[in-house]
Amino acid sequence: MGYVLKTHGLKGDVVFEIDADNPAAYRKMESVFVELNKKLIPFFIERIQLNGSRAIVKFEDIDSMDDASKFKGARLFLPLDVLPKLKDGYYFHELIGFKVIDNQEGELGVITGVFESGHQDLLAMEYRHKEVLIPLIDDIVTKVDKKAKTVYTSLPDGLLDIYLEDDEN
Image (spheres, rainbow, N blue to C red):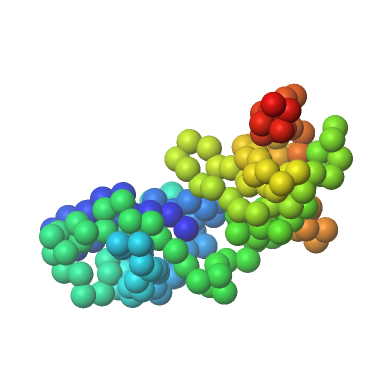
């Protein structure tokens, strides 16, 4: 759902960057999983103050800047059953298993994963026994049909060829 940007003040508060279309939906969250040393650890929230996509958060039992500093840069997660329901749009994890249909090439394969990065999110798809990465941008991913479990694309010319070059040599 986001990550911890920094500490805030001297009493253990931290600043979250919430990576969501509607950060206000997280206003009443009671707990969050924080990834520390590659493990998800639950923390209860004492108070939260939202300001756009950022929130100042006070965890229970974290009472100093030193205690809070260990959270800097940590990724934040919620259990799937706690995520707010989306009327429009989708969560990345929902796309795994969706088939991909391109406007030029037709049915291509199935989404096997989603890679999130600071610069560009990518869909991973199995295509002719190769992993193909598709940039998750509006010009390329033109439509997501959750009911049909289908992602529609308009892939740039040559994108698939890049992944198949080894087969031709």
